[in-house]
Length: 204
Image 1 (cartoon, rainbow, N blue to C red):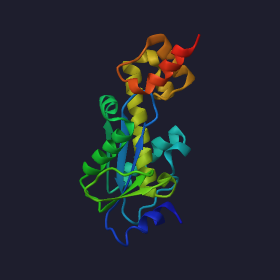
Image 2 (cartoon, rainbow, N blue to C red; image 1 turned 60 degrees about the vertical axis):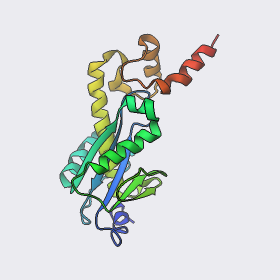
Image 3 (cartoon, helix red, strand yellow; image 1 turned 90 degrees about the horizontal axis):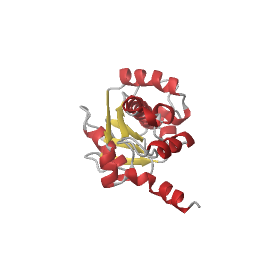
């Protein structure tokens, strides 16, 4: 079954099928992003796949195609401040909820990547590994990932010491070295660094 055929299995029951996914749950810094996408039943985009399996260049190319061919899409985020207040899982759900609810076209069902769903005004169905099964979810994963990467490049200009352009906020060796050297930037997630600091404190 193709990714589009998977989405079409839901169109027997629902007119408007939306795919939704997030990007940026794991990093030590930056907002968490989410996207929602609605396609026409006949739209097939070649090369679409789970964003993590694509090169950055390919994601950028597909981003433009998705934006052009989608009936509607939305990209939203939850901020570092919200992540610290409500935790990352709740904020991933919040970002997805914002993405779905800010679209002009109101979906009848939302296919959500993963095993949890946000509270939505329409039906929501969790699809484990959905970005490898559903075209709409895969498209949403690409939009969210590209949007977040672009945001992190802007943050890299704002806070050059941490070299966000190289690691996008993820916990790489270089990133930890920059934290050791410069401390936290205004866009770091303090709750994500607690374990690291505890580990450092244990070292002789």
